[in-house]
Length: 75
Image (cartoon, rainbow, N blue to C red; front, side, top):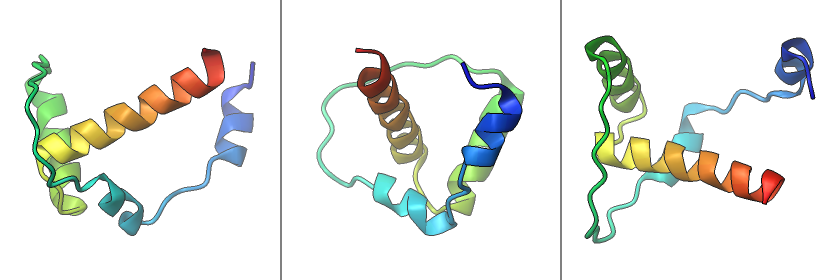
């Protein structure tokens, strides 16, 4: 397993346009409820505003990206 320094060296910081791919205006029919601390909600909303995405699109994009990583690497 990589140590954190090796991970940081391999990590390429995306520019803000990277997050535009998460913009998904398609019809959505399912709901997912998430509980989060007020402090974390403020941070997530700040990030959403910074990349000009709705909370739903930002969280969905991040979740699906993490999902793809886990499935591709471990399943």
